[in-house]
Image (tube, rainbow, N blue to C red; front, top):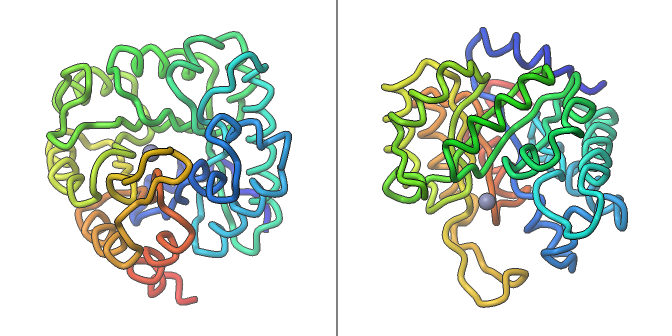
Length: 278
Ligand SMILES: [Zn+2]
């Protein structure tokens, strides 16, 4: 089954239902010995690991793959690694047994600092600007990406547990400033326990008609070294909360840091298996 065009994803949003996104890439690579500073470099140094993780998410039921394009690599040509990450995800989706779409996960700092590379990178691709902590930077990054005509753009913020951004903006501020941008999805990722997103979803539902995207972490990690962090929320509890998101009308559900193919499979079994009858 070929890679699904992001234009198809955009038109599918006019219907109903929820799309199952994938889970973490960075923490999955770290679990295989890739250092935190090497996550983006893995696109070139060990592409087989990146492809294998994409394939495990596809097998778990994900229909949207997040390219390994989020992060930093000091002193390296970042745009080149982002381009290679996009190609790896597209390759995995292209050979998938089920139709799958790909989006590029980008930081607002990457978009703002490398704006000359953006038109080539995002043309005919879907983009998810995620883990945004500054509303002003997010607005600027969306404007840059939109100028380059992406096929689809999602915008996801990293709220604190009280649904406030680190820059002090609240949900109403986010909706007010982003509504004129007409993004295709708006939501939240990373953060605290998944249950803490339920109130946020309810507030977003009241404030906007924009399709909502939610991708929590598997809880707050414990441990000292980042590559050995332990994430406490196991797949059954994660999937149970995801079912609440789906019931509340969330259109994209997946996972952030510490989530694994097992978390995504649990969501699939709990929320999607009956609809797909597989
Ligand atoms: Zn995260």
